[in-house]
View (spheres, rainbow, N blue to C red):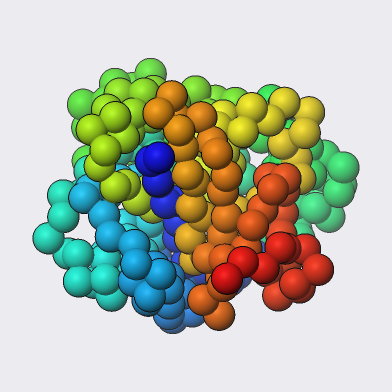
Length: 255
């Protein structure tokens, strides 16, 4: 059996301000820092260790990983960063207040942009797109790979390139892996692993700072998956949907 841990970065400044973030390179709040520390402590308490780590090129995911590994005394393990693990690009919505966008475009349209698999938000401005292309984080990836906007399926496509090229070889070498990434990147990977149809992905959500553990067979098919909660319990998520981790009715408590 092989194990891989997914962690969504802690609360960011734009999370706190209720803004669309996407590829905007925004940092963690104090709560985000504390969430990453707690996640590391939980993983250590439950006997987890890692041989390698993967993350995006956005600081909120990188910093979450640094803090978590520091708590586990694993700062020495190799970390690989890739734009392919970046959050979904929210196009022209990036930086905008979600309530203001809702008031302007309507709840139905905004929910479609946020939760559907195939619908893309409006494209980013030419000025901001050129700024993305000029960002040194994306030097060498090719201008065609810097998006104007993305759907969840677009995010899934690029994340799966990384999965097959980098993560699968690690797992087949029996390396213990953690991926620190973003809500939509992790939604895309969970969608792939659990064979979730496009029409069913709207209700899938990944909580911040809560380790999500997948146990895989030798063919890298899921055996089971569960969250490690902040009280140290394992919360079995037999149907991959949003969980209110504060409500035990939504989980089968293990141990």
